[in-house]
Image (cartoon, rainbow, N blue to C red; front, side):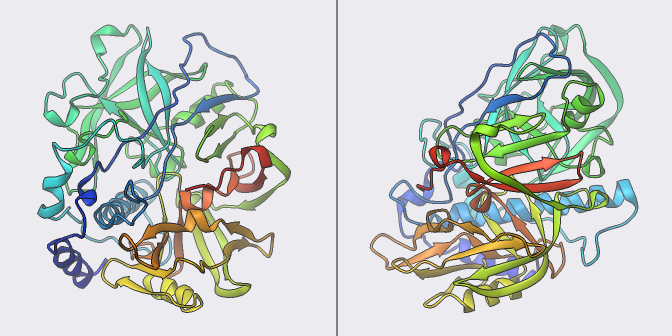
Length: 449
């Protein structure tokens, strides 16, 4: 992200916003937790994890929330700058076109509103897909954000005494008979330029009855104030080991190695109701037809699919680009020039704010668009998932869920998040080193925003 872009964000954030609704909670949601059991399930055919629902970056009245969009863009930028640093440290190289850049900080105007004033009862501004796990023996329960764009597990420690850990479940090492401290320290940079950091432990981690023994994780003692008021306790990464800052085997890979699952696949259904993470295969009741798989290169650390096309109103607007499929990213982000080319094919579209990378389009004529990989099927994005709401109450222009932001991944890589994943059944396969998509079963396809 260029200095010009950063300065423009600061300028934009200093302007007054059109509604008090912009100061609503940044992170809230309903968590439909599936309680994990304490007994191991050897070589299970698969287990379901119920997930809390998530909406897009909109206000309660359906209008676009500019503050949340800025915060989300900065979060994604810093997340991938962290990932690139981990890749360089772990592999000695970066994907072609990638670039290490400075982290971004949340402008003071937004940071003040994001701390100490977050409602935990509003169920409309959800920004994470969360489910339950336990850590330790006996199990201590945590509500976790499952993220295909990172690889480590962390939760707050009981030694975290700052207000940033208030209201969260905290890991108590003295209460577990299976804890073991390791050498080293865990540290990740996050959205406001601060970090999550703490010691490194191995523990028993249980997810839906699947037990990962001696799993490396961090009970963090310092939590970025970006997580203040976030109802999730921590993050469980589902990407490849190359992204691990702990230099450890990620949780799902541990389950594979320890024979807890018969299939090295996990799958997401992300819809308004009944969202699910299935570990150890797929849930055949949630999709129809075949799963269309596309190979990924695991050395990048990401679930990164090459040879993608973006198709707008039956016209190919962008061709032969890479896509990272990331359940931890709410919207979709692409290189600014490529996203501009995309919106040039959308009649009536215009930049909402060039520095932030968002565009608007006529609310009454949303584009018909989707993605295709390797000349396969065109996977459509429902207009309800593309629409982040009117620019203001009564506006005829709505904001699109694809924004042009340079996160340091080069000029040919897009981040494809939940705005796309909510339209398909997504399968991540370590067995095939591939990502697959299938059509959601009709009874499970909820396209409402």
